[in-house]
Amino acid sequence: MRKLNALLIAILLLTHSYANSNQQPKPKVKPNIVVIYLDDLGYGDLSCYGSTTIKTPNIDRLANMGLRFTNGYATSATCTPSRYALLTGVYPWRNKDAKILPGSAPLLIGTEQQTLPKMLKQCGYNTAVVGKWHLGLGTGIVDWNKKVTPGPNDVGFDYAYVLAATQDRVPTVYINNGFVDGLNTNDPIAVNYDKNFEGQPTGKENPELLKMMWHHGHNGSIVNGIPRIGFVKGGASANWKDEDIADHFLEKAQTYIKNNHNKPFFLYYAMNQPHVPRTPNPRFIGKSGMGVRGDAILEADWCVGELINTLKSEGLLDNTLIVFSSDNGPVLNDGYYDEAVEKLGNHKPGGPLRGGKYSLLEAGTRVPFFTYWKGKIRPAVSNALVCQIDLLASISSLVGSKITDTDSENLLDVLTGKSSNGRKSLVTEANTKTAFRKGDWLMIPPYPGDAILEEVNIELGNSKEYQLYNLKNDIGQKDNLAKSQPKLLSEMIQSFELIRGKDYKNVEKIELK
Ligand code: NG6
Ligand code: CA
Image 1 (cartoon, rainbow, N blue to C red):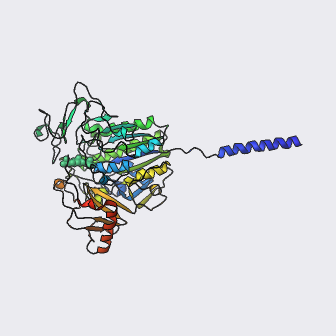
Image 2 (image 1 turned 30 degrees about the vertical axis):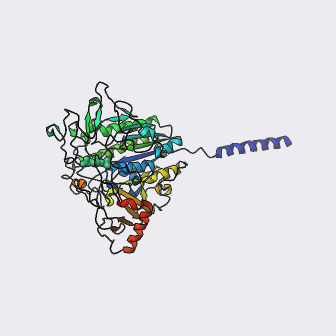
Image 3 (image 1 turned 180 degrees about the vertical axis):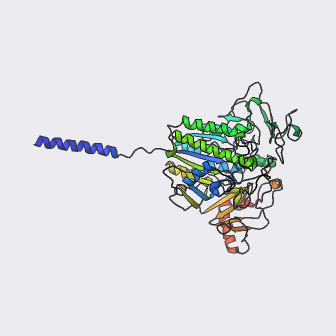
């Protein structure tokens, strides 16, 4: 009997410890993180943001099954500063060079700086950027025939397949981990932003060679019949085909996902649509009924659908946090005659918002912004104030990593729908000028106009007077309440100056290159 008891106890103990070992918490699986970032996509450019004139079913599906923000912001109304803030968590106005960069600009992010991909890399992630870079490359004098460095690989990206600046700026080539892709050494490539290379045709002198005509700027070297900003010579074999850029980047992004499906990864998929020159693949031409700008948005929507299909077929959708946004607001005429204005019809790229790209008014920086995580984020709409600059602190909190202090706020609970307490305030920026959002209010200090930007025909928000808007009651910024709310205005100025400092008045003259 005693023996039997001992046996029973032994069995009990064994099963108990087995059960216990089964209850051990499983090692936490690190979610993949994908940031899908469009270029110049406006608050009103998607059907999930209320557009009835354009249909973006693939993006809508994600937005409607995810958490869609109505007060989601880029830090800036142009590309370089917004991307700088997204990757570093630092307000771009803290860096005097964070302005629209030429294709020959040196790397803007310091190699010692903290970045989102670096932080993730330290946590065991593989990291990649595919698409538009526009944060400078090299140290100032670049030999494009050698490895171009420092670049994205030196600020945290394991894999970088990028275009240097913008589709309208030279060099018009893909750069694969620092090397110009497809370059023939017998035809070296040279780039110059100050003067042309002898004997090379330009948009200014040779309009007969153009398939797309320039309206303002964009009269430098001609590549594929499209005049660009800056001058280039040689490297013909490496030139991209404009109509294939979207397919090409998509393919690189998909291959990256497939190659990394069994380890945690961070993919920054920086798409080029609907930035100028708008060159959607012929598959999309005429599909939107509003010319190439609309067609490029449809192409982007298709690309997003394909990317999601890849995550799905690799079995990764349940374990991937997706963040979707745009680097700045919309523009129609950004320097080419492409009928974006003429064929617009009733479409409102900024939705109910005033202004657009380059503007301190809302449409400059308030952009589509949503998070999606199958099974983890419940479908909802959030009115919380969030900004792309917050991804660094929020994602670092998600993966359990520590970062040093920046302008980035940890809004993980807001971005995952557990809280609706977003930022209390945000400094927004356009062409080195800054404005201030606090609660429902937006204050724009007096600034001189930008003659150089007049051609785009967008209200830039510059005025001799202070502007103060209540965005809750007046999303279209029709009523300037600065005069009728003097106390609130001075409180706003005070809070703004505490963050921004008083030198915001000394705005630099912008020089577009
Ligand atoms: C401007 C260009 C514009 C666009 C912009 C950058 C001119 C006249 N305009 O300088 O076409 O390229 O820079 O856009 O050259 S962004 O989205 O990358 O900030
Ligand atoms: Ca942009």
